[in-house]
Image (tube, rainbow, N blue to C red; front, top):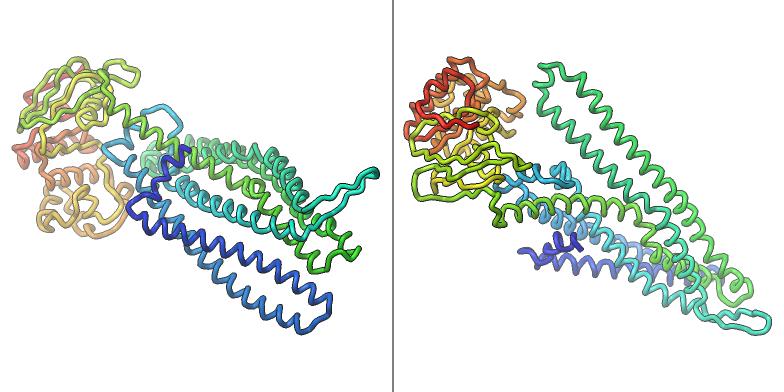
Amino acid sequence: MQFVRLAGPFWCSENKTTIRTLSAFLVALTVAQIAVSVIITEWSADLFDALEQRSMSRLFTQVGLIVLIFIANMAITATHLVVKRRLQLSWRGWLTDKLIGQWMRDGRHYLVTHLPGQHDNPDGRIAEDVRISTEYAIDLLHTFFYCVLLLTSFTEILWTLSGTVTVDLGLIEIPIQGHLVWLALIYAASASTLGWWIGKPLTMATDNRQTVEANFRFALVKARENAQAIALIHGERHENPHFHRLFGNIVDAWNQQTHAWQRITMFSSGYSILSMAFPILVSAPRFILGTISLGALMQSAQAFQQMVAALSWPVDNMGKVAEWRASVERVLGLSKALEQLEREIAKPDPYRIRLVKSDKSVLAFRDLCISRLDRIVCVSTLNEEIRAGERVLIAGNAFSGNKLFKAIAGLWPWGEGSVELPDDETMFFMPPRPYLPTGTLRASICYPSDASVFDQQVLENTLELAGVKELKEQLDQVADWEKNLEREQKQRLGLVRLLLHKPKWILMQEAFDSLDPEGEVDMVNLIHKRLSDSAVLTITKQPNIQALYKRRITLC
């Protein structure tokens, strides 16, 4: 039900007309598939009767009919596949957009990492688990609906073919109508119950495997993103055993899942053989006694198999249901965490920092206290006002300064008091590692604005000012700039980005710590000169930089 509440609104979304049309078409095609199955059983009965009667004319008639059935079945099956896959992709795209919209909004992707709960590896949950949740849901719903129609259609056929069988108990004789139907029900119910019991461990095993696979993938991605840092300190000796441990968890989970699959496979293989032979053996005495024809015998066997197949849906889809359920739980885990975060932010809590928009060009802290997640205070009762154009050094505890910047950005709501922000005035944060997305260098520098906003000559001149004129020739090259550039180059490109955007408020945290002291001073002086009307708040350990600031706010 929780998954229905999360993903169900897809059918009422803005494209509901197209979605509902595709769904109705899928239902109609499924009904057509059942019709073909019924026609094939009737054709089979006529074929075997023609063979029993050695009628060549009836045989040629059946050959012509099977060609028509063959063409119709191909057309229906192919169209069904296209419609189903289009619906699956549409649902996946809708749910992916919904989750990404919740996750990648106003720093929620950062804040959610601080909440307790099972919502790790959100990238894997959005990319892989959403795919499985939606694709398998439609697959399972389709096969379930197909089996219901199959059961309805072939129960009637099998009931008619069964006739009445009299059971002689000595003293009394009991007539049983539709005995093959009752046998099919008992057979399928017994097999389904046994199969479901055998397959129960698979759900836990599948969930565990998906979790450890995601952990292994995350560790590899993290190592790739920090390849240079690992290489510089020769951290490979630590990383390799770490990867081996994570892969060892995958091996354990794989073996656990293999044992669960082994039990299901053994049961399913035996069950499939018995399902093929059982209906013929049960109906054979009636054929031998001459009660039914060969065609009726084969049609009874096929109808029995179809009915048992319909009743065996839980057994046949046990593995897929387990995998679907595990993925749904992972998607719901992320969705619940994001919803919990929204409630935490929205509820009136005295232990939350309030962000207040002001019509004044002032950044103010009113009785501001910043706490850690365990509510230990790291910034206590801060009352300060910073006006436009001021240069302020945030001195003292660097950890507290980091939390202050996050509170200003709305990324750290834990604490008390308020932060007043100037409305409609841009704030620009310069961390030690500026983010450079993959793409052209031009687009990466201009991020988050569009590259077309900035003039080519202005961009080249700014690169020269920042001391990276050698990168002018690479502006239209596509690469992973986080990996390809040195830390100093990336920090200088952070300065280029700042000078291009010309914000009114600048918050720098060790933004040039890879440069030598003179280079760092040059960068800060360049900011003060080029953006003289902008307010600058700086966190730095460099004494030469600290000397440039007359006003200090010292955090304990």
